[in-house]
Image (cartoon, rainbow, N blue to C red):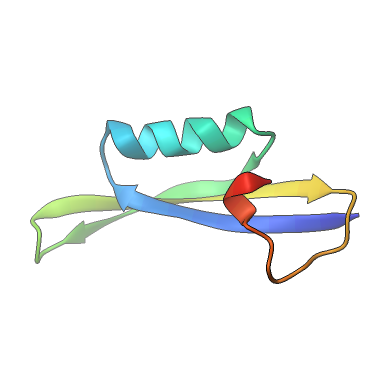
Length: 68
């Protein structure tokens, strides 16, 4: 079994929430707490959420993690 890891990032808005929700709907699980940071160049909040997923195949660096 292989554990895959992704760090989803984006502006703190509904698009980011949709990105996380899509990952969850594909079987990814939240890993840790979300993180927030103020981007002074854009004057917006940025956020990140790590997600993990166990798969039965071996890891391959050419995998498109978003397709898993």
